[in-house]
Image 1: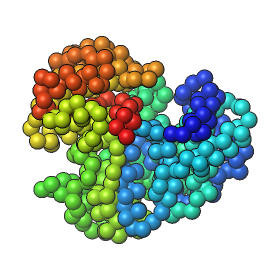
Image 2: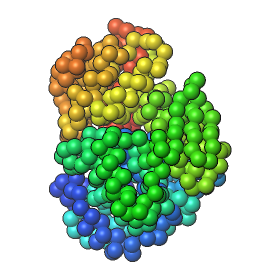
Image 3: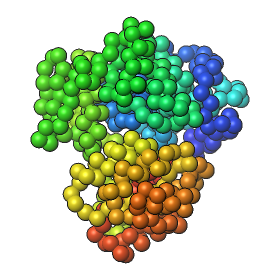
Image 4: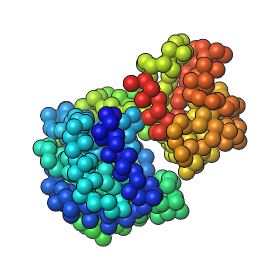
Length: 423
């Protein structure tokens, strides 16, 4: 990232004492000062959920672009650099334009209190409102009802991916309460593609949808997706699709692909767009195979993978992904944030790994110390070690097990550190 946007982003970090403060008042104030760009966007598809929303968005983007359409996308957090959060008509926002819209938002805010996510979301909306496109894909940052992205009065479609227990300090102590926050993106009369949910979450979302007159396009009712002989089979009232498996690894990606396909079919896209959604998708740090970089140079015979999942549900999907890979001794290099359910994350993974090497995430104030992560791994039944750094962990594993599979996991922040060092 060049110094110009970096400097403005650092200034924005100082505009609010908290990282999270879920209200929309500051968004409405700044958006009004900017001329309400959220009202001048191309048709918006708004996506919420605990797990899978990023992968679903990536598949939806691949499908729309495969049909020749221009697509804006807003996602968070970024991994290597901020520019990843904003795609304009398919391309990452250019540095000069990012600097321009950040500067405009900073000036319009007039020094008032506002969170980093809120003001940068305003910048993304401003940039997308000024650039022609066919669709905007908008991913919530946290929750839905009070998320900074929940400012579009009439989206073209909403999507709610699987809801599970995460961020209880912000969203509620039960899955039902968390689902209520996610359901806050529903808008009167706007259809919603709904992935399979826990029963208590589904009940909350269905009740909210009924009160707003929202048509639910629900998995297991209106659409079905399954893996059959290694292929993806999707069926709804318009017919059956027999497609290649998703390019993203893991059984859970079939469900995410199903939600993306349901959205594409609702929007009137053809079978070729649905195939592009699963075959052309890319999404970093979701069981991503690393092919170059300094860590790989230190262990040339090892196989390297990177995953940013960080809650209990992600632990389950990661375990399923490992079970699908060819048999190979697997070692984790794991770093997590202190806000996450580390026990819930590690428990399903433990049977699939030989040992875990715990690291403290570099330059991250909310990291769990390596010794705490290692102790949690032992409690989950793993052999565990502490390492001073990623490179030390990799060298230790490679020295003793040169042909191992090494999976770096536990946090998108750790994944971002890896990708920055490998760019």
